[in-house]
Image (tube, rainbow, N blue to C red; front, top):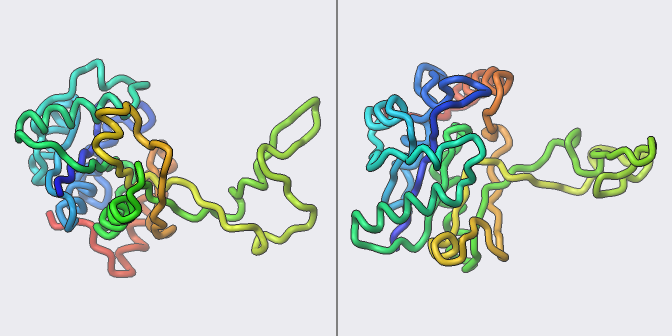
Length: 240
């Protein structure tokens, strides 16, 4: 079984300039998914897709293959992942003379994933014959869908779910969101159907204490705090 993992890391971050190579715990952010993906038991090929020369060099220094420089038209602020992945898959299949079975998207902005997060998501995808699988994390009670509101004619109304008056936070039904750590899908879903998720999507639950998606400076500060706490618990995210 051939599984391609693509770490997507374009340059030009606006929320946090130079984010993908900014040092977190003394290591560039992009080195976290590289080292973790190399520990996966299922990934057969690992590459970094970037348009940035400096990101490419740092990725290579940490043991990742950067087989191409991503075209500028695929590295704009609003460029979706679909064409980026189609480009990466086409390039690697032509280079290796093979056809992949599955592909995985790993974003540097979720640095605290572990190999089991990746392999667990992939196993769920493979075993269920789903179109795609995503890592999920339980939502804190303060962010629960029942607490999200909208305003209609100056009146507060449920955005999607009615919040029963007086319901305690511990009685809220469990809800999940995508953690951002792992996105896995059938190769043909991307290349033949032009989709990333498909109709049948399954989820693999990951640890809340390791889940973060770094977009803004405050997220970075939180990530630094999380890293310190995780190290106290014995987590090691890097070999290099």
